[in-house]
Image 1 (cartoon, helix red, strand yellow):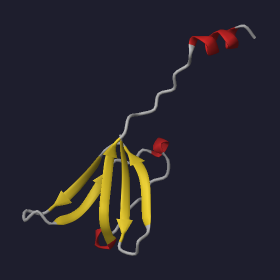
Image 2 (spheres, one colour; image 1 turned 45 degrees about the horizontal axis):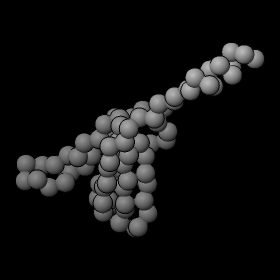
Image 3 (cartoon, helix red, strand yellow; image 1 turned 30 degrees about the vertical axis):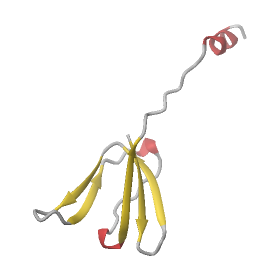
Image 4 (tube, helix red, strand yellow; image 1 turned 90 degrees about the horizontal axis):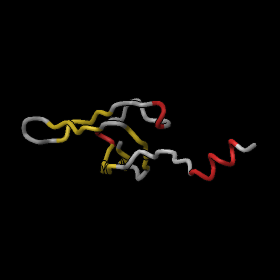
Length: 80
């Protein structure tokens, strides 16, 4: 899973989580846009972003958060 931060020319920024994120370049290596795999369970995500208005795109790998239930919590629930 990846956390994407996009900073626009106006100075505004948005941040969202996606399963997969790719940057598209043409044959000369120039930035053409980007694609991501939408997953509604990760929260709100933009449908489309105009690459002409983007100054910077940052993305980082993040670990999926798994809920861990301790043995003590399980015992407390079963004893009730």
